[in-house]
Image 1 (cartoon, rainbow, N blue to C red):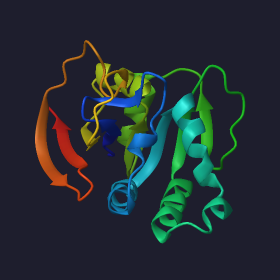
Image 2: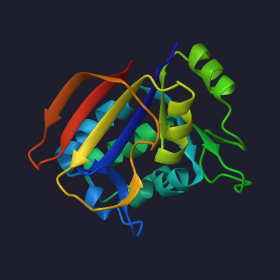
Image 3: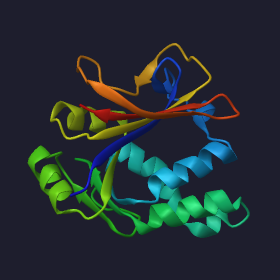
Image 4: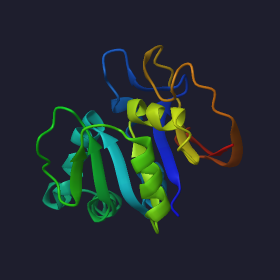
Length: 185
C-alpha cells in the first residue's frame, strides 16, 4: 500500500505563489533541488491539478535541460519515469507520456489507487491537495519554507481544514530554506 504525500515549496507565510501568481522566489538552489529529487525518487504516481501539470510538463523534454546541471537532468528523468493523473474538466489531451486525465477527483478511486500501489503517490497543487486533505487521504507532508514572506496569494495548506500533524524530521539548508516533514495524524 502506498502513502499519499503532499509536498510544497512555500513562502515563510505559507503561500505557493504571491498575489500576482508569481513563484520565482521559490526556485530551489542546487542543494534544495537535490533534496527534492531524493524526495521524488520513490514516487510511483503523481496526482496533479491542471495548472500544476501544465507547469511541470516542461520536464518531459530532456533536451530542454541538456545544458543544465546534472541535478536538473536527474529531476527530469525522475519526473518522466512516474505515472501521472491529471484532474481537469478542461483538458482533453495531455502532452506527456505515462499520463491520463480524470475529470473529477474521486476520493474512493484515490483510496483504491493507494491500496493497490507498490509505491508512494504524490499530490501536487494546493487546490487538489485540499480535496485530499478534506477526504482524509493525505498521509504525509513535506513542506519546504523559503526565507521570504510574500504577504498573500495562493495558500500552501487549505483554509478551514484542521490537519493534526506529527513532526517526523526537519532540515535547514544553506540558503535559509527549511524542510519540515510531517505525518498526518
